[in-house]
Length: 128
Image (cartoon, rainbow, N blue to C red; front, top):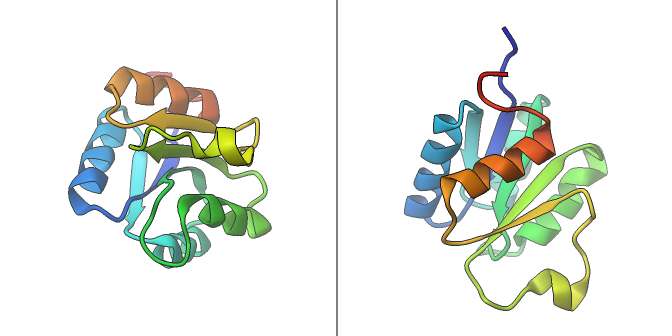
């Protein structure tokens, strides 16, 4: 039996993070979570088997989701990132900073949308 990938979920709103954790677990993935950029970087350091990170773009504090991914990739170049945003303005279209291998998920999202994007990033599906 294949061990499901580990996904780090980062959102500064507890309710949103709790929903994301529950949704990702329901899809069969293992999860860890953080409420901010520094916490997420610490979790990545402590858990080298994180396969993907699901992060809100607009995190409170000095490290937003884009900066978090940039810093994380300084030591984890292979880290897959799924960015979430609840804002209509597409920060990536304006700044053109999203690597081609990453994905963007607009809130509110459907579980099937989340499932498809995580599967593309990790190459894993529940039951596979």
